[in-house]
Image (cartoon, rainbow, N blue to C red; front, side):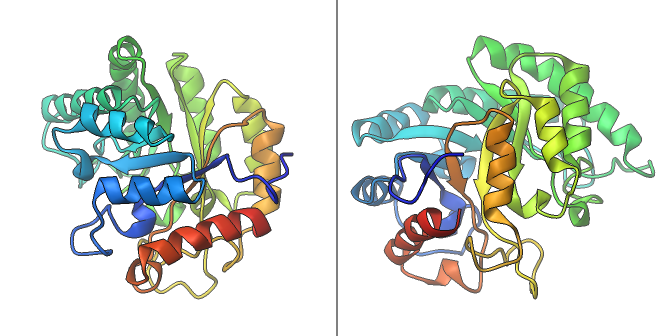
Length: 286
């Protein structure tokens, strides 16, 4: 297990931690200002959301690398199923390819997939997972040509109805094995998997070639909003070190990405202070 106490070179920022994933939140720093602030603090990786990039993917990717950082990933593919998905398979797949193109333009090696919820007209998650497998398999070949890996991110079961029919690491690994494409793997987000006692075994089943990302945050015992009230690492009930130990025991040695959705707390703070807290918590509790 890596010693993070004196070296935070593996630390990456997901810009959602500054509120940049939703309109009307955060301090509104420009991409350039965020990149420079990360560089000043020795944060070497960054993950953007599509809404920040627009038509500037190549330009922003070059700006990140010029500052000495790397683009670790892009959030996210469109919902592939469920009530929040675009209407119709054609629209979904067109947007999926657009997300892959944006990741390629940025030089982001990974595009995160939040699958979408239960498909209208069906019950349970079985039929929806079949649709996810079919649509990811179709996109995987296109992504491979663009040198982009696709990371299936299981979400906490509370999101099963509308945001993600994929709610366990077991099902995520099963999907990867069924699709059987080398550029399809999983992302491990502490917020969504902290409760899963089968996690370590499923990560071993995935192995180092299937784990594409590791996301840091915490689950607050008295959460006020299951979407927008995540904790900074150390503020909640997730066992940060045990989860990282399981991730690294499975062979992952890549970036550790802080992704904190916090509308009433961290998003209201000065972004510089938030970045300082990310560094301090990464070294002390992760």
